[in-house]
Length: 138
Length: 393
Ligand code: SF4
Ligand code: SF4
View 1 (tube, chains in turn blue, green):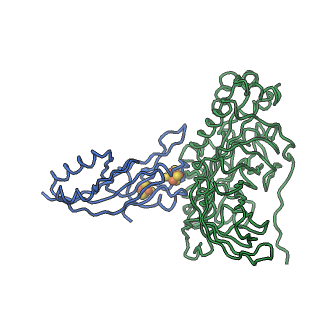
View 2 (tube, helix red, strand yellow; view 1 turned 60 degrees about the vertical axis):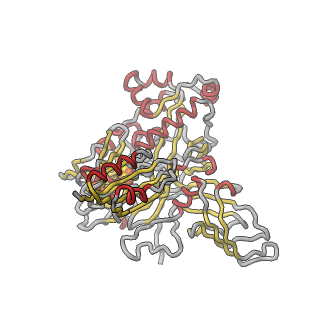
View 3 (cartoon, chains in turn purple, green; view 1 turned 180 degrees about the vertical axis):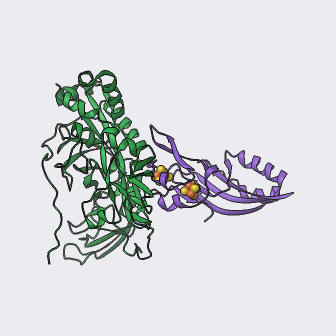
Protein backbone atom coordinates (compact mmCIF):
# COMPACT_ATOMS: atom_id res chain seq x y z
CA UNK A 1 0.00 0.00 0.00
CA UNK A 2 1.33 3.42 -0.92
CA UNK A 3 1.13 5.92 1.94
CA UNK A 4 2.39 9.41 2.72
CA UNK A 5 3.71 10.42 6.13
CA UNK A 6 5.25 13.63 7.38
CA UNK A 7 8.43 13.39 9.46
CA UNK A 8 10.61 15.69 11.47
CA UNK A 9 14.25 14.53 11.42
CA UNK A 10 16.76 16.04 13.79
CA UNK A 11 20.41 15.50 12.93
CA UNK A 12 23.08 15.46 15.62
CA UNK A 13 26.07 17.77 15.49
CA UNK A 14 28.50 15.33 13.84
CA UNK A 15 27.51 15.62 10.24
CA UNK A 16 27.39 12.55 8.12
CA UNK A 17 28.87 12.63 4.66
CA UNK A 18 26.24 10.19 3.41
CA UNK A 19 23.62 11.73 1.12
CA UNK A 20 20.73 10.31 3.14
CA UNK A 21 17.92 11.76 1.08
CA UNK A 22 19.46 10.37 -2.10
CA UNK A 23 19.48 6.89 -0.59
CA UNK A 24 15.88 7.23 0.52
CA UNK A 25 14.88 7.79 -3.07
CA UNK A 26 17.20 5.27 -4.69
CA UNK A 27 17.36 2.39 -2.21
CA UNK A 28 13.85 2.54 -0.75
CA UNK A 29 11.97 3.75 -3.75
CA UNK A 30 10.41 6.69 -1.90
CA UNK A 31 9.14 10.02 -3.11
CA UNK A 32 10.62 12.74 -0.90
CA UNK A 33 9.10 16.18 -0.49
CA UNK A 34 11.17 18.50 1.69
CA UNK A 35 9.27 21.30 3.46
CA UNK A 36 12.03 22.79 5.48
CA UNK A 37 15.71 22.27 6.22
CA UNK A 38 17.67 24.22 8.75
CA UNK A 39 20.91 24.12 10.70
CA UNK A 40 20.51 25.53 14.22
CA UNK A 41 23.05 27.78 15.92
CA UNK A 42 24.19 24.71 17.89
CA UNK A 43 25.20 23.02 14.65
CA UNK A 44 22.33 20.57 14.71
CA UNK A 45 20.24 20.21 11.60
CA UNK A 46 16.62 19.44 11.03
CA UNK A 47 14.64 18.37 8.06
CA UNK A 48 10.89 18.26 7.60
CA UNK A 49 9.74 16.00 4.83
CA UNK A 50 6.96 13.88 3.40
CA UNK A 51 7.85 10.32 2.56
CA UNK A 52 5.60 8.64 0.01
CA UNK A 53 5.98 4.98 -0.79
CA UNK A 54 5.26 1.44 0.35
CA UNK A 55 4.61 1.24 4.08
CA UNK A 56 7.26 -1.49 4.57
CA UNK A 57 9.80 0.54 2.60
CA UNK A 58 9.13 3.62 4.74
CA UNK A 59 9.67 1.55 7.89
CA UNK A 60 12.98 0.22 6.52
CA UNK A 61 14.02 3.70 5.43
CA UNK A 62 13.39 5.10 8.91
CA UNK A 63 15.54 2.36 10.43
CA UNK A 64 18.28 3.32 8.00
CA UNK A 65 17.97 7.03 8.89
CA UNK A 66 17.99 6.24 12.62
CA UNK A 67 21.28 4.37 12.21
CA UNK A 68 22.96 7.79 11.75
CA UNK A 69 21.82 8.88 15.21
CA UNK A 70 19.02 10.96 13.70
CA UNK A 71 15.96 11.40 15.90
CA UNK A 72 12.67 10.90 14.08
CA UNK A 73 9.32 12.36 14.99
CA UNK A 74 6.06 12.25 13.15
CA UNK A 75 4.32 15.58 12.87
CA UNK A 76 0.77 16.35 12.19
CA UNK A 77 0.46 20.00 13.14
CA UNK A 78 3.74 21.37 11.91
CA UNK A 79 4.28 23.80 14.78
CA UNK A 80 7.50 23.43 16.74
CA UNK A 81 9.01 25.18 19.71
CA UNK A 82 12.80 25.42 19.52
CA UNK A 83 14.02 24.68 23.04
CA UNK A 84 17.35 26.37 22.46
CA UNK A 85 15.57 29.70 21.82
CA UNK A 86 12.85 29.50 24.49
CA UNK A 87 13.53 31.49 27.66
CA UNK A 88 10.47 30.10 29.47
CA UNK A 89 9.08 33.59 29.92
CA UNK A 90 5.49 32.38 29.76
CA UNK A 91 4.19 34.97 27.32
CA UNK A 92 2.57 32.18 25.31
CA UNK A 93 0.48 30.97 28.26
CA UNK A 94 -2.53 33.20 27.68
CA UNK A 95 -2.39 32.86 23.90
CA UNK A 96 -2.31 29.08 23.54
CA UNK A 97 -5.94 28.19 24.21
CA UNK A 98 -5.58 24.38 24.04
CA UNK A 99 -2.63 24.61 26.49
CA UNK A 100 -0.20 22.87 24.14
CA UNK A 101 2.28 25.39 25.52
CA UNK A 102 1.79 25.04 29.25
CA UNK A 103 3.38 25.41 32.64
CA UNK A 104 5.28 22.18 33.24
CA UNK A 105 6.41 23.06 36.75
CA UNK A 106 4.91 25.81 38.94
CA UNK A 107 8.14 26.18 40.95
CA UNK A 108 10.65 26.72 38.13
CA UNK A 109 7.95 27.92 35.72
CA UNK A 110 9.41 25.90 32.89
CA UNK A 111 7.16 26.03 29.83
CA UNK A 112 6.64 22.74 28.03
CA UNK A 113 5.17 22.08 24.60
CA UNK A 114 2.82 19.16 24.05
CA UNK A 115 2.42 18.82 20.32
CA UNK A 116 -0.54 16.46 20.66
CA UNK A 117 -2.64 19.32 22.03
CA UNK A 118 -1.60 21.84 19.37
CA UNK A 119 -4.31 22.91 16.92
CA UNK A 120 -1.86 24.92 14.76
CA UNK A 121 -3.70 28.20 15.37
CA UNK A 122 -0.39 30.03 15.00
CA UNK A 123 -0.95 32.45 17.91
CA UNK A 124 2.33 31.48 19.57
CA UNK A 125 4.27 32.17 16.39
CA UNK A 126 3.77 35.92 16.34
CA UNK A 127 3.50 36.19 20.11
CA UNK A 128 6.78 34.62 21.13
CA UNK A 129 9.29 37.47 21.68
CA UNK A 130 12.15 35.00 21.21
CA UNK A 131 10.85 33.57 17.91
CA UNK A 132 11.07 30.13 19.51
CA UNK A 133 7.83 28.97 17.90
CA UNK A 134 7.57 28.47 14.19
CA UNK A 135 5.62 26.55 11.63
CA UNK A 136 7.48 23.92 9.67
CA UNK A 137 4.99 24.12 6.86
CA UNK A 138 5.45 27.75 5.92
CA UNK B 1 25.99 42.81 62.36
CA UNK B 2 28.49 41.99 59.62
CA UNK B 3 30.66 44.22 57.46
CA UNK B 4 31.49 43.99 53.77
CA UNK B 5 35.10 43.20 54.70
CA UNK B 6 34.14 40.32 56.94
CA UNK B 7 31.89 38.86 54.26
CA UNK B 8 34.54 39.24 51.56
CA UNK B 9 37.13 37.54 53.78
CA UNK B 10 34.73 34.64 54.24
CA UNK B 11 34.12 34.46 50.48
CA UNK B 12 37.87 34.46 49.76
CA UNK B 13 38.54 31.72 52.28
CA UNK B 14 35.64 29.63 51.01
CA UNK B 15 33.72 29.92 54.29
CA UNK B 16 30.85 32.17 53.23
CA UNK B 17 27.29 30.89 53.54
CA UNK B 18 25.56 31.81 50.30
CA UNK B 19 21.90 31.13 49.54
CA UNK B 20 19.78 31.89 46.51
CA UNK B 21 16.81 34.18 47.10
CA UNK B 22 14.40 31.21 47.15
CA UNK B 23 16.57 29.27 49.57
CA UNK B 24 16.79 32.31 51.87
CA UNK B 25 12.99 32.66 51.99
CA UNK B 26 12.67 29.02 53.00
CA UNK B 27 15.43 29.42 55.57
CA UNK B 28 13.68 32.41 57.12
CA UNK B 29 10.36 30.57 57.18
CA UNK B 30 12.00 27.59 58.88
CA UNK B 31 14.36 29.34 61.31
CA UNK B 32 13.21 32.94 61.64
CA UNK B 33 14.81 36.24 60.62
CA UNK B 34 17.21 36.48 63.55
CA UNK B 35 18.89 33.15 62.87
CA UNK B 36 18.93 33.75 59.11
CA UNK B 37 20.66 37.11 59.65
CA UNK B 38 23.29 35.42 61.78
CA UNK B 39 23.88 32.31 59.64
CA UNK B 40 23.69 33.62 56.08
CA UNK B 41 26.29 35.94 54.53
CA UNK B 42 25.08 36.53 50.99
CA UNK B 43 21.81 36.05 49.11
CA UNK B 44 21.70 35.99 45.31
CA UNK B 45 18.77 37.71 43.57
CA UNK B 46 18.08 37.86 39.84
CA UNK B 47 15.82 38.85 37.00
CA UNK B 48 15.56 38.04 33.29
CA UNK B 49 13.35 39.98 30.92
CA UNK B 50 13.15 42.60 28.18
CA UNK B 51 14.95 45.81 29.16
CA UNK B 52 14.64 48.43 26.45
CA UNK B 53 16.96 51.00 28.03
CA UNK B 54 20.06 49.00 27.19
CA UNK B 55 22.86 49.46 24.72
CA UNK B 56 26.60 49.38 24.28
CA UNK B 57 29.60 51.52 23.48
CA UNK B 58 31.90 49.99 20.88
CA UNK B 59 35.38 51.06 19.82
CA UNK B 60 36.43 49.74 16.41
CA UNK B 61 40.08 50.79 16.43
CA UNK B 62 41.48 52.93 13.60
CA UNK B 63 41.41 51.96 9.95
CA UNK B 64 44.30 52.73 7.59
CA UNK B 65 43.94 55.47 6.42
CA UNK B 66 42.05 56.84 9.40
CA UNK B 67 38.39 57.80 9.45
CA UNK B 68 36.36 60.09 11.68
CA UNK B 69 33.10 58.16 11.49
CA UNK B 70 30.08 60.46 11.07
CA UNK B 71 27.45 57.73 10.84
CA UNK B 72 27.65 53.96 10.91
CA UNK B 73 25.47 50.87 10.54
CA UNK B 74 25.96 47.48 12.18
CA UNK B 75 24.23 44.83 10.08
CA UNK B 76 22.19 47.75 8.79
CA UNK B 77 21.26 49.06 12.26
CA UNK B 78 22.39 52.65 12.86
CA UNK B 79 24.60 53.27 15.89
CA UNK B 80 25.06 56.75 17.31
CA UNK B 81 28.40 58.15 16.10
CA UNK B 82 28.29 61.71 17.42
CA UNK B 83 31.22 60.96 19.73
CA UNK B 84 34.92 60.37 19.00
CA UNK B 85 36.28 59.09 15.68
CA UNK B 86 35.76 55.33 16.06
CA UNK B 87 33.41 55.09 19.04
CA UNK B 88 29.69 54.47 18.73
CA UNK B 89 26.66 53.65 20.88
CA UNK B 90 24.25 51.00 19.74
CA UNK B 91 20.80 51.04 21.34
CA UNK B 92 18.67 47.94 21.91
CA UNK B 93 15.49 49.23 20.27
CA UNK B 94 17.10 50.72 17.14
CA UNK B 95 15.65 49.46 13.83
CA UNK B 96 17.32 49.20 10.43
CA UNK B 97 16.93 52.29 8.23
CA UNK B 98 14.39 50.84 5.89
CA UNK B 99 12.58 48.62 8.38
CA UNK B 100 8.90 48.79 7.41
CA UNK B 101 8.12 49.20 11.17
CA UNK B 102 4.37 49.59 11.62
CA UNK B 103 3.64 50.83 8.08
CA UNK B 104 1.83 47.54 7.50
CA UNK B 105 0.29 47.21 10.95
CA UNK B 106 1.06 45.17 12.96
CA UNK B 107 4.73 45.23 11.95
CA UNK B 108 6.91 42.16 12.35
CA UNK B 109 10.10 43.77 13.68
CA UNK B 110 12.50 41.01 12.71
CA UNK B 111 15.77 42.66 13.57
CA UNK B 112 17.33 45.58 15.39
CA UNK B 113 19.85 46.73 17.98
CA UNK B 114 19.09 43.99 20.52
CA UNK B 115 19.75 41.33 17.90
CA UNK B 116 23.08 42.91 16.94
CA UNK B 117 24.05 42.90 20.63
CA UNK B 118 23.21 39.21 20.89
CA UNK B 119 25.27 38.48 17.76
CA UNK B 120 28.19 40.43 19.21
CA UNK B 121 28.17 38.39 22.43
CA UNK B 122 27.86 35.18 20.40
CA UNK B 123 31.09 36.15 18.65
CA UNK B 124 29.34 36.22 15.28
CA UNK B 125 30.48 38.33 12.35
CA UNK B 126 28.78 41.70 11.91
CA UNK B 127 28.92 44.00 8.90
CA UNK B 128 30.10 47.54 9.55
CA UNK B 129 29.37 50.27 7.06
CA UNK B 130 30.46 53.79 7.88
CA UNK B 131 30.42 57.22 6.30
CA UNK B 132 32.44 60.32 7.07
CA UNK B 133 32.54 63.89 5.75
CA UNK B 134 36.35 63.56 5.74
CA UNK B 135 38.95 65.76 7.40
CA UNK B 136 42.65 66.37 6.80
CA UNK B 137 43.65 64.15 9.70
CA UNK B 138 40.92 61.55 9.01
CA UNK B 139 40.69 61.32 5.20
CA UNK B 140 38.72 58.08 4.70
CA UNK B 141 35.10 58.76 3.74
CA UNK B 142 33.55 55.35 3.20
CA UNK B 143 34.13 52.01 4.76
CA UNK B 144 32.59 48.57 4.57
CA UNK B 145 34.02 45.62 6.50
CA UNK B 146 33.20 42.76 8.82
CA UNK B 147 34.15 42.35 12.46
CA UNK B 148 33.46 40.27 15.55
CA UNK B 149 33.57 41.33 19.19
CA UNK B 150 37.14 39.96 19.38
CA UNK B 151 38.30 42.58 16.86
CA UNK B 152 37.02 45.47 18.98
CA UNK B 153 39.08 47.31 21.56
CA UNK B 154 36.07 47.66 23.83
CA UNK B 155 32.47 46.52 23.85
CA UNK B 156 30.99 47.95 27.02
CA UNK B 157 27.34 47.50 27.82
CA UNK B 158 25.96 50.71 29.34
CA UNK B 159 22.30 50.53 30.28
CA UNK B 160 20.58 53.68 31.57
CA UNK B 161 17.66 51.77 33.09
CA UNK B 162 17.44 48.12 34.14
CA UNK B 163 15.91 46.12 36.99
CA UNK B 164 12.68 48.02 37.54
CA UNK B 165 11.85 47.43 41.19
CA UNK B 166 8.22 46.58 40.40
CA UNK B 167 6.14 46.96 37.26
CA UNK B 168 2.66 47.44 35.82
CA UNK B 169 0.40 44.59 34.95
CA UNK B 170 -1.10 45.26 31.54
CA UNK B 171 -4.61 44.57 30.30
CA UNK B 172 -6.90 45.83 27.56
CA UNK B 173 -10.43 47.09 28.23
CA UNK B 174 -11.17 48.00 24.60
CA UNK B 175 -12.78 45.68 22.10
CA UNK B 176 -9.84 45.23 19.77
CA UNK B 177 -6.49 43.51 20.21
CA UNK B 178 -3.56 45.71 21.30
CA UNK B 179 0.06 45.20 20.29
CA UNK B 180 2.31 46.52 23.07
CA UNK B 181 5.72 46.08 24.67
CA UNK B 182 3.82 44.01 27.24
CA UNK B 183 2.87 41.59 24.46
CA UNK B 184 -0.44 41.24 22.70
CA UNK B 185 -3.37 42.20 24.88
CA UNK B 186 -6.64 40.55 23.99
CA UNK B 187 -9.87 42.59 23.88
CA UNK B 188 -12.25 42.96 26.86
CA UNK B 189 -9.59 42.06 29.44
CA UNK B 190 -8.89 38.84 27.55
CA UNK B 191 -5.55 38.47 29.32
CA UNK B 192 -3.14 40.12 31.76
CA UNK B 193 0.62 40.37 31.28
CA UNK B 194 3.24 41.16 33.89
CA UNK B 195 6.98 41.69 33.79
CA UNK B 196 8.83 41.18 37.06
CA UNK B 197 10.82 38.44 38.73
CA UNK B 198 8.71 39.16 41.84
CA UNK B 199 10.20 37.66 44.98
CA UNK B 200 13.51 36.91 43.20
CA UNK B 201 13.95 40.44 41.88
CA UNK B 202 16.99 42.37 43.20
CA UNK B 203 15.31 45.63 44.20
CA UNK B 204 12.28 43.88 45.73
CA UNK B 205 14.70 42.10 48.06
CA UNK B 206 16.41 45.36 49.02
CA UNK B 207 13.42 47.69 48.87
CA UNK B 208 15.10 50.63 50.63
CA UNK B 209 18.40 50.36 48.71
CA UNK B 210 20.40 49.57 51.85
CA UNK B 211 22.96 47.41 50.05
CA UNK B 212 22.44 48.14 46.35
CA UNK B 213 23.93 51.53 45.52
CA UNK B 214 26.29 53.25 43.11
CA UNK B 215 29.36 50.99 42.78
CA UNK B 216 27.62 47.77 43.84
CA UNK B 217 28.85 44.76 41.98
CA UNK B 218 26.36 42.96 39.71
CA UNK B 219 26.31 39.87 37.49
CA UNK B 220 25.35 41.28 34.12
CA UNK B 221 24.71 38.45 31.66
CA UNK B 222 27.58 36.48 33.19
CA UNK B 223 30.08 39.34 33.35
CA UNK B 224 31.08 41.06 36.55
CA UNK B 225 29.76 44.60 36.24
CA UNK B 226 28.44 47.31 38.49
CA UNK B 227 25.77 49.88 39.18
CA UNK B 228 27.07 53.20 37.85
CA UNK B 229 24.12 55.39 38.79
CA UNK B 230 20.48 55.35 39.79
CA UNK B 231 18.57 54.28 36.70
CA UNK B 232 16.58 56.79 34.66
CA UNK B 233 13.06 57.32 36.06
CA UNK B 234 14.28 56.11 39.48
CA UNK B 235 11.29 57.10 41.60
CA UNK B 236 11.55 55.71 45.12
CA UNK B 237 8.87 57.99 46.56
CA UNK B 238 5.76 55.92 46.04
CA UNK B 239 3.16 53.94 47.88
CA UNK B 240 4.71 51.06 49.82
CA UNK B 241 2.99 48.14 51.50
CA UNK B 242 4.21 46.03 54.46
CA UNK B 243 7.92 45.31 54.65
CA UNK B 244 8.61 48.49 52.56
CA UNK B 245 7.64 46.82 49.27
CA UNK B 246 6.76 49.40 46.60
CA UNK B 247 3.34 48.98 45.00
CA UNK B 248 4.46 50.54 41.72
CA UNK B 249 7.54 50.93 39.48
CA UNK B 250 9.74 52.78 42.01
CA UNK B 251 13.52 52.22 41.82
CA UNK B 252 15.70 51.46 38.81
CA UNK B 253 19.41 50.83 38.20
CA UNK B 254 21.91 51.95 35.58
CA UNK B 255 24.29 49.07 34.89
CA UNK B 256 27.50 48.47 33.00
CA UNK B 257 29.81 45.51 32.26
CA UNK B 258 32.28 44.20 29.69
CA UNK B 259 30.36 42.48 26.87
CA UNK B 260 33.40 40.38 25.98
CA UNK B 261 32.82 38.45 29.20
CA UNK B 262 29.08 37.94 28.75
CA UNK B 263 27.20 34.72 28.00
CA UNK B 264 24.95 34.78 24.92
CA UNK B 265 22.05 32.93 26.55
CA UNK B 266 21.58 35.97 28.80
CA UNK B 267 21.78 38.64 26.07
CA UNK B 268 18.88 37.97 23.74
CA UNK B 269 17.42 40.10 21.00
CA UNK B 270 13.64 39.99 21.19
CA UNK B 271 10.74 41.31 19.20
CA UNK B 272 7.15 42.35 19.83
CA UNK B 273 4.81 42.25 16.85
CA UNK B 274 3.28 45.69 16.30
CA UNK B 275 5.64 47.33 18.80
CA UNK B 276 9.34 46.89 18.05
CA UNK B 277 12.56 45.18 19.10
CA UNK B 278 14.31 45.08 22.43
CA UNK B 279 16.88 43.16 24.43
CA UNK B 280 16.11 40.49 27.03
CA UNK B 281 18.80 40.54 29.66
CA UNK B 282 19.77 38.41 32.63
CA UNK B 283 20.94 40.20 35.77
CA UNK B 284 21.97 38.89 39.16
CA UNK B 285 22.73 40.97 42.24
CA UNK B 286 24.26 39.60 45.45
CA UNK B 287 22.86 41.05 48.66
CA UNK B 288 25.08 40.95 51.75
CA UNK B 289 23.10 40.05 54.87
CA UNK B 290 24.60 42.81 57.00
CA UNK B 291 21.89 42.92 59.65
CA UNK B 292 18.44 41.73 60.65
CA UNK B 293 16.58 44.45 58.79
CA UNK B 294 18.20 43.39 55.53
CA UNK B 295 17.41 39.75 56.31
CA UNK B 296 13.79 40.62 57.01
CA UNK B 297 13.46 42.31 53.62
CA UNK B 298 14.93 39.20 51.97
CA UNK B 299 11.99 37.17 53.29
CA UNK B 300 9.57 38.93 50.92
CA UNK B 301 7.21 36.56 49.11
CA UNK B 302 5.16 36.87 45.92
CA UNK B 303 2.02 37.09 48.06
CA UNK B 304 3.41 40.26 49.74
CA UNK B 305 4.17 42.07 46.48
CA UNK B 306 1.36 43.94 44.79
CA UNK B 307 1.34 45.36 41.26
CA UNK B 308 -1.04 47.79 39.61
CA UNK B 309 -3.27 46.64 36.77
CA UNK B 310 -3.33 49.28 34.04
CA UNK B 311 -5.55 49.54 30.97
CA UNK B 312 -3.21 49.86 27.99
CA UNK B 313 -6.04 50.87 25.64
CA UNK B 314 -6.63 54.29 27.25
CA UNK B 315 -5.15 54.90 30.70
CA UNK B 316 -1.57 53.99 29.78
CA UNK B 317 -1.24 55.85 26.44
CA UNK B 318 -3.20 58.90 27.64
CA UNK B 319 -1.42 58.99 31.01
CA UNK B 320 -4.66 59.35 32.96
CA UNK B 321 -3.09 57.92 36.10
CA UNK B 322 -6.07 55.60 36.50
CA UNK B 323 -5.38 52.20 38.04
CA UNK B 324 -7.91 49.39 37.59
CA UNK B 325 -6.84 47.62 40.76
CA UNK B 326 -3.95 45.72 42.29
CA UNK B 327 -3.01 42.04 42.33
CA UNK B 328 -0.20 40.07 43.96
CA UNK B 329 2.50 38.13 42.12
CA UNK B 330 1.21 34.99 43.80
CA UNK B 331 -2.17 35.58 42.12
CA UNK B 332 -0.46 36.32 38.80
CA UNK B 333 1.42 33.05 38.95
CA UNK B 334 -1.76 31.03 39.44
CA UNK B 335 -2.32 31.22 35.64
CA UNK B 336 -5.98 32.19 35.85
CA UNK B 337 -6.85 35.15 38.02
CA UNK B 338 -10.14 36.53 39.27
CA UNK B 339 -10.20 40.22 38.58
CA UNK B 340 -13.23 42.51 38.48
CA UNK B 341 -15.48 39.46 38.56
CA UNK B 342 -13.81 37.94 35.53
CA UNK B 343 -11.54 34.92 35.18
CA UNK B 344 -8.51 36.08 33.20
CA UNK B 345 -5.49 34.11 31.94
CA UNK B 346 -2.06 35.54 32.67
CA UNK B 347 1.12 35.81 30.60
CA UNK B 348 4.55 36.81 31.82
CA UNK B 349 7.28 38.70 29.98
CA UNK B 350 9.87 37.96 32.66
CA UNK B 351 11.35 34.48 33.00
CA UNK B 352 11.38 33.03 36.51
CA UNK B 353 13.07 29.96 35.04
CA UNK B 354 16.06 32.02 33.89
CA UNK B 355 16.10 34.11 37.07
CA UNK B 356 16.41 30.94 39.17
CA UNK B 357 19.24 29.79 36.92
CA UNK B 358 21.05 33.12 37.41
CA UNK B 359 20.60 33.01 41.21
CA UNK B 360 22.31 29.61 41.14
CA UNK B 361 25.11 30.66 38.74
CA UNK B 362 25.91 33.72 40.84
CA UNK B 363 25.83 31.62 44.01
CA UNK B 364 28.33 29.20 42.42
CA UNK B 365 30.60 32.10 41.40
CA UNK B 366 30.60 33.47 44.96
CA UNK B 367 31.19 30.04 46.49
CA UNK B 368 34.19 29.59 44.18
CA UNK B 369 35.63 32.68 45.83
CA UNK B 370 36.02 34.73 42.67
CA UNK B 371 33.06 37.07 43.02
CA UNK B 372 33.63 39.49 45.88
CA UNK B 373 31.09 42.09 46.97
CA UNK B 374 31.69 45.80 46.94
CA UNK B 375 30.43 48.41 49.34
CA UNK B 376 28.49 51.14 47.50
CA UNK B 377 30.38 54.38 46.88
CA UNK B 378 27.15 56.32 47.26
CA UNK B 379 23.58 55.32 48.09
CA UNK B 380 20.74 55.54 45.59
CA UNK B 381 18.29 58.39 46.27
CA UNK B 382 15.59 57.25 48.71
CA UNK B 383 13.27 60.21 48.23
CA UNK B 384 12.65 61.36 44.69
CA UNK B 385 9.58 61.72 42.50
CA UNK B 386 9.20 61.52 38.75
CA UNK B 387 8.63 64.44 36.41
CA UNK B 388 6.43 64.28 33.34
CA UNK B 389 6.95 66.10 30.08
CA UNK B 390 4.74 69.11 29.58
CA UNK B 391 4.23 69.92 25.91
CA UNK B 392 4.58 73.72 25.73
CA UNK B 393 3.09 75.61 22.85
S1 SF4 C 1 6.67 32.91 24.63
FE1 SF4 C 1 8.31 31.87 23.51
S2 SF4 C 1 10.16 32.11 24.79
FE2 SF4 C 1 8.38 32.58 26.06
S3 SF4 C 1 7.88 30.60 27.05
FE3 SF4 C 1 6.59 30.75 25.22
S4 SF4 C 1 7.80 29.69 23.64
FE4 SF4 C 1 9.22 30.14 25.32
S1 SF4 D 1 -0.08 26.91 17.21
FE1 SF4 D 1 -1.74 27.51 18.61
S2 SF4 D 1 -2.30 25.60 19.66
FE2 SF4 D 1 -0.31 25.23 18.70
S3 SF4 D 1 1.18 25.71 20.31
FE3 SF4 D 1 0.91 27.59 19.11
S4 SF4 D 1 -0.70 28.74 20.18
FE4 SF4 D 1 -0.78 26.62 20.94
